[in-house]
Image (cartoon, rainbow, N blue to C red; front, side, top):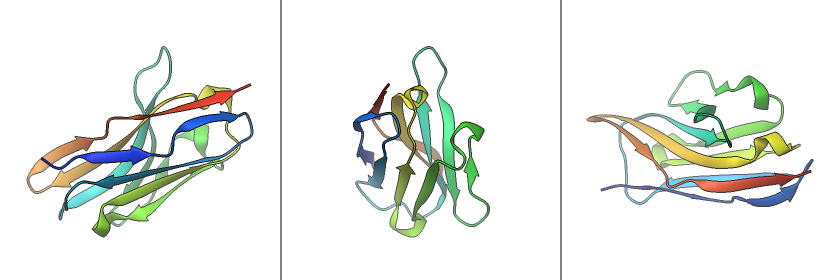
Length: 117
């Protein structure tokens, strides 16, 4: 079973930066998109940014202008550059990949991001 592996979380002061990385333990040949979600305390898991295999990148309004998603869908890698971090960005960040053939959604184990005030 292919898995997603995230790295790059940690503790940073407000205004700092972090870069998250995600890759797969094996090849996936029909990914429609890769994305980052986060779960902040007291809230449901929410989409942070989505990188499609062709098409427009999508960002949550709360991170526009601060976060940048990039990667190589064909090589099953995605990154999230997070700048100007705020305490409200604290949470567990999950990598997500949507495979089309057969249809299946992969999730990473999550990486903790903590922004201190």
